[in-house]
Image (cartoon, rainbow, N blue to C red; front, side, top):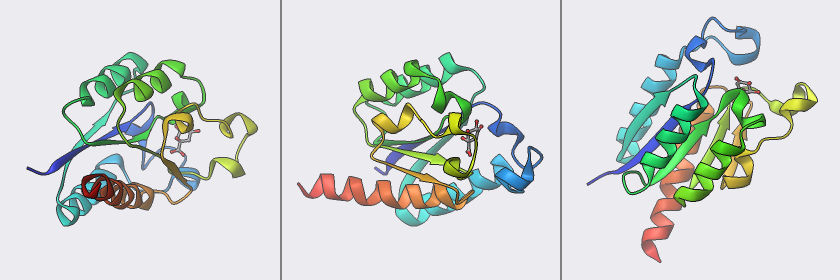
Length: 150
Ligand code: DQA
């Protein structure tokens, strides 16, 4: 059976395509989901792609990944910079996590330079727009292969 990857998107990412396209690009979240599904097929990974504007729903989704998913890709949006609850959930599930941001956080306001999610993440990709998600899938795939080879 293919390993399942939870790809979790946080607040306002449902508005991609129309939301500040000069910062986030013109791709919609559905476009990014399609890219992820194509990459998932190539990498033989099952994709569980979700978005929520609600912090508690994101915590529930992360908790439900324990025992059902092999890894997590997360763009927690603004909650990256504020949410200890999301960090704690990521630490609790003990799964490999890759953090993604569409924009380059370090070219933006200083409050975006710190992410709680990073503390639970294997690595972080930012500034590469939608391509960041497919690169994160490739990274997770090789992390999972290495784990299996141990
Ligand atoms: C974001 C960056 C966050 O600072 C912002 O609040 C978002 C999107 C990104 O993908 O670049 O909502 O996570």
